[in-house]
Amino acid sequence: MEQEKIIQYLKAFFEKIPERIRGAILIGSFGREEGSLLSDIDIELLVIEDQLDIDEFTNEIVELFKHSEESLIVKHTIWLANQRKLALYHGSELLLTELYLYTELSQFDKYFLGSRITDLNKCILIDHCNVIRPHLETILKLPYDDPQGLIRELVSSIQFTLESTYTAKRRDDPYKYYFLFNIVLHELVRLAYVLDGKIEYNYNPPRSAVNADLLPSMDLTKSDMHMKNLIAFFFQQLDRIDKNEAILTRKAREFCEDLMKRK
Image 1 (cartoon, rainbow, N blue to C red):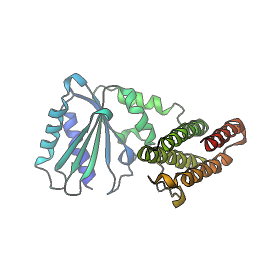
Image 2: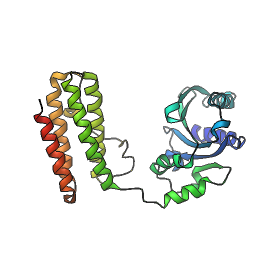
Image 3: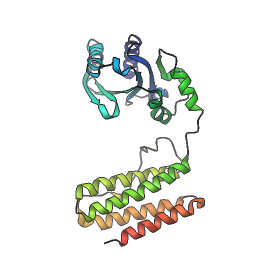
Image 4: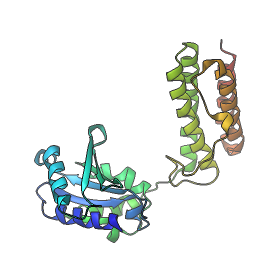
């Protein structure tokens, strides 16, 4: 598999520069040993920031693959500074490798835990300072899944963004309305997913189906119908929430009812 070759190339490269790369771990499907021909490669790096120039680092990686097989050559790179992420696209198929450049171990936590990795031997590529394994072993022992807390968070987020969506509609701002509507819909899909008893990948539920009535448009003449359908879907999810959260669901309903009355 081409991705496995890419991982080995990068691992060998990282091993040679301990003065800049303190450690590296595989996350995502390859970190779980479930990678397929269609899977991206995701690697978190612990870097020494003042020793790493991103342009120089990128050029070195491009050079690393320059004389490899055609399918491995880095044809394009994108540096996403706000995410501290370097995207590499390999060969004619543009296989994607995402390198996350972090300066603190705690920055590993979110995506590592979200990857549901259990075998550290397979996911740790480099640990020059012997600090990564102890950190990952520690966070694996901490409580991570909190479905009820996530449900409460989603209900609150949906209410807040619903109001913003209504406001965009009142201000006759079709693009902002459309943008916010989609955020609400995404959070509702997440809520339905968690209420189905699933927690893995809740940040972007895979293969989720959405009724056509819930799909928005920028045509504000249809916005009343779309908003009504969206809130009806929200109410369906509120009906599924545990009775112990009766106050939460009642307040959410009252909020939405007041929103719909607003001129």
